[in-house]
Image (cartoon, rainbow, N blue to C red; front, side, top):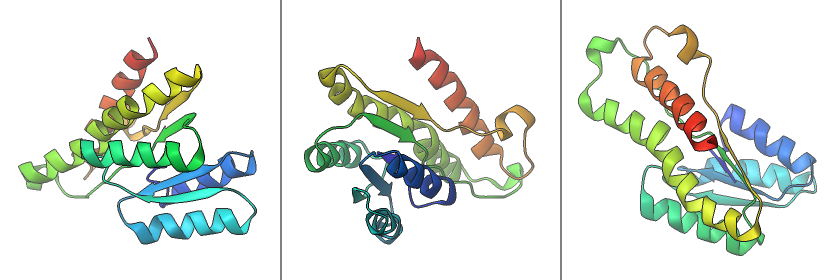
Length: 162
């Protein structure tokens, strides 16, 4: 299952997983983006499922994970990749925008990991991969909220691994 599977990096991840024999659930908030990538995977002989979901919403995430496990037979790998990155000076970021970036880019990873883990534990195997960004290590003009969320992902991943 690849969240943000319809974006550039997400598409590459889905394509690679499929080429290695994985059935791929392409997760996107916009159904059309998910379907485009899922159709390309299918056209190349892979197994794929397009899933529309909002990773920042617990009920949407739980429904997404349930559907993926039911329709693909298991959930072995979660690639947390969904992210938004509005660009503006930090002095122009509204509180609502800050909250939305944190909800998608950080809370979404937590919700997806929490929902996927029981399936992995039941099978006795699983992997959770959290995509961060080099921007966290160098900072980036016009992306304060995005870079901050990516730093949170680094901490989340390190702690989750322990």
